Amino acid sequence: TIVIANDEWVLSDAGFSFITPDTTRFVQNLTSLFGGPGNVLGYSTNFGLTGSSLAAAMTAAGNTYTVSTAVSFTPATLSTYKAVFLAGPVKGSVPDTTVLIQYVQAGGNVLILGGTSSAEFGGTAGEAAAWSPFLSTFGLQFGSTSSIANGCGGTTALVSDDPLFAGVGTLYFCGGQETLVTNANNPNTKIIATDGSGLRLFAVARVLSSLSSPGQPIAAGGGSGSVGVTAS
Image 1 (cartoon, rainbow, N blue to C red):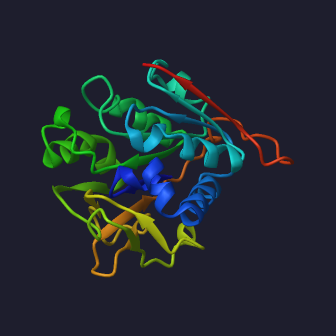
Image 2 (image 1 turned 180 degrees about the vertical axis):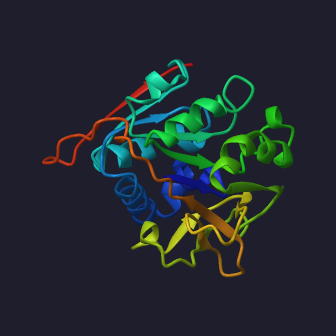
C-alpha cells in the first residue's frame, strides 16, 4: 500500500502541537492500514519525519521507528521493514525508485509526504517529476504547483469517509502540493481526503502482492515499540 500526503507539516512537531489527538490517531490508523505494528524506516532528513512527536506516536502505536539515511537503500535492506516513510530529497534526489517499486511489489508499504519545496528538486514541479517514476507505476502523482490548505495559521478540517481518517477530523498543513490519481477508473487508487474546497490532500494505491509483507510485525501484547535515530 502507498499513501501520499499533500504536505510534510502533517507529521512534524508543529503538526502534533496544533492537533495532538487527531495526529496521533492518524498514526495509529496508518499503522493499521500498513498491516499492524512493525519495523518502520524513516528514510529522510526532512523535519516532517524526524521529530520527537512522530517518534513517540510511532512507538505508542507499537512500531519500531528508525530514522536513518545511512542504511543501504537496497531490496535486501528494505525487506526488513514493514513500511518506509519518505519526504524530500536524500543525497540530492529521491531514493532509487526501482528499489522502491520492487519493495512495494514484494508487499512493502510506503508513505510519502509531498510539498517539501526543496531547492534540490528545483521547485514543486521538480518534486512532482522526481517522484513520478515511482508513483506513476501505481497510478498516483503529485501536483506540479503549490497548494495551500487553510494557510499555515491553523488546522484544516478533512472531508473523508476512508478508515485511515476514522477519528481524525483535522490535521495541520502549511503549503504543499495536491495528491492525484492518474486514472479515475482504476479501482486500486483513490483520493481519500480533501479539504472543504475539494483540495486533494491524501491519495492511496492498494497494491496486491502474492508475497509475504516485509518486516516482521512486533508481537502483540504491550503496544510499545522503540525508536532509533541514525545521522546520515
